[in-house]
Image (cartoon, rainbow, N blue to C red):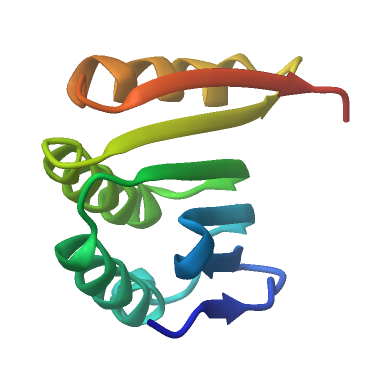
Length: 127
């Protein structure tokens, strides 16, 4: 499967999905004007990848410093797909957050509660 890379913009995150390496990265800020249009091809590629994945360890690295409510809905859809895929794979979610950003940390903790099949790994960094 072909990897997916999209450069970050002022309103959308960097997307670096290296399917052959089983590494999925979202990094930056996410408040695109039309989240469904931006994330549509991303979630479709992820769905296709996860359908083909069996007995893999998939590293998911999320380092979002800001995301709006429409991005939150898409993120929940992505995590729902990952949670389902965890029946046949090991999903490690590296939830990276600024050490001073309690809001992002708490969102990651909520994800952990909502999607228990995903291995939640909080990681802080200094801004």
